[in-house]
Image (cartoon, rainbow, N blue to C red; front, side, top):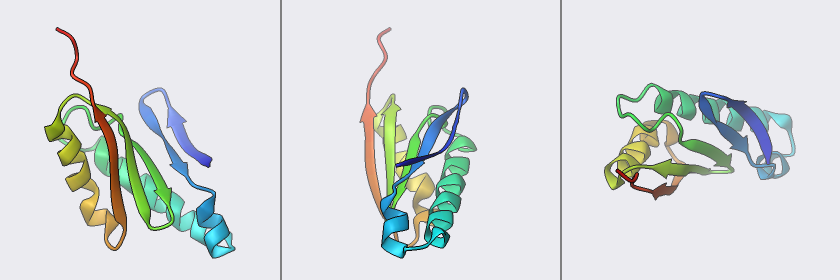
Length: 102
């Protein structure tokens, strides 16, 4: 996988190398990069606190959400937030719910 973006304030975005292999050109790679960035932007701007750290992987026709959230509600909201951008793509919600100790 290729690391697309990483920073102290955001989860990394990865693009699977299989996107390039499947298309045989970098154009498919650029489409995946663009899609991944758009999805991350939606999650960062979400009104739901806790979605700004969700990781995104674009692999072929799959959008994979990964990382940790504090509730099942946030897990579902992450998925529904990216659904409009994932038109025709499969959303794989691999988010783990981990409640914080009080």
